Picture 1 (tube, rainbow, N blue to C red):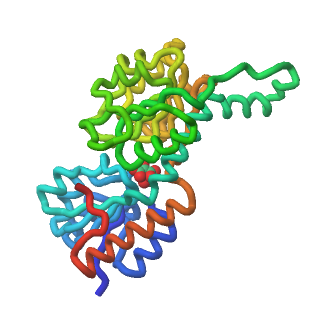
Picture 2 (cartoon, helix red, strand yellow):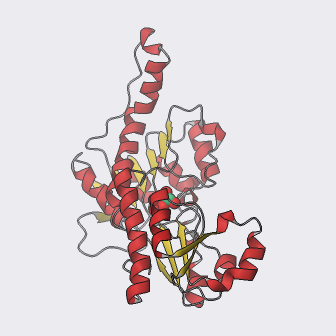
Picture 3 (cartoon, rainbow, N blue to C red):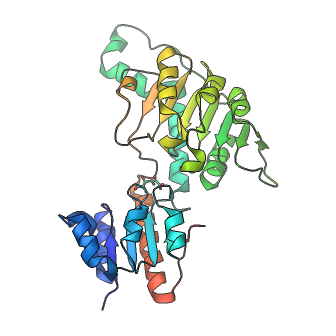
Length: 312
Ligand code: 8YV
């Protein structure tokens, strides 16, 4: 008999079919009465497969009394109640490493876009405005100061890319990293003050909520640019919108938002912002590698009783 696996939220079609080959897969989203389904059948599932987007809250974890493992598609686990999982002895896996390069590539794409105004210039051409005059000058990237918030796998990959642009790099994180080639800045406002570009690459969740505050945004200032490929929750979004509208911040390039897929409409008319629909890991190659990682974790759990990429 195949082990019972509950799926929360949609996944790539190829992953869903691969999972269905190895597991008795039930989709929570297909249940018309979710509460009644969980109350009646929650005890059947030892595994839950979810994503960084859908996560697993305490109520869901507690409605699955035999739950032993949660496998999540994505590296961020801020939407999973890890405390609830720990209390119940539930092991959790994510998909680190395989998405690092694509996320770092996109961070640099955003950085160049917002500084050189690529998206804005493309809109200018499509509007026919080139026929009427020149596009305004933009901001140089090479050689400028890059501040990175969170120097984990993704932050480090962004720092490596900065080497190709001769950008001095400094970072801010919970603690200093030994033998790190980049200078540590204990104060985030001080890092923002030094930086021409501030890239957010730390984990989301309660510990980093609104870390990029009004004070940090003002320290980055009218000549500075914010790039976010982490989580919208890390930034005080209303303060960011206010600063952009008032011209107190040079620009922002955002792949993530506080209430996705809702983006503050006040940003739509601004050429100083680049807005993307959370696509940092969204390449065919990386998403397939993430799917393979989810499947490999679940199969290893069943076959060997251990996860390949456990969280924490
Ligand atoms: C994906 C992400 O958008 O890995 C993460 O933490 O946010 C992204 O890679 C997500 O996994 C899709 O749910």
